[in-house]
Image (tube, rainbow, N blue to C red; front, side, top):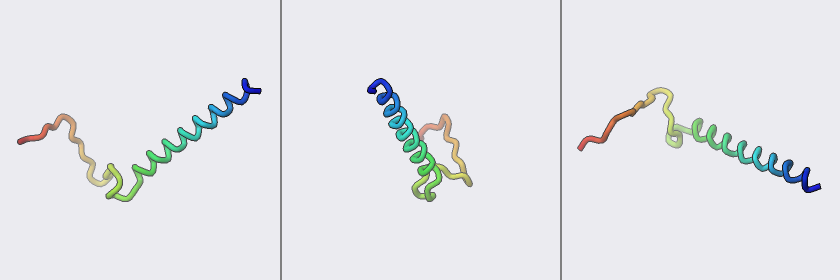
Length: 53
């Protein structure tokens, strides 16, 4: 019985964790502008920049 139950419970737990992670990512990217790290109208690319003093 346990040989069949353990993989099933593992699949359910993995699916729930994956779903929660994906929903959190989607929610953070589509939130209101003051809560979202992305701005589609004015993207910023700061690759290789350094702070000047």
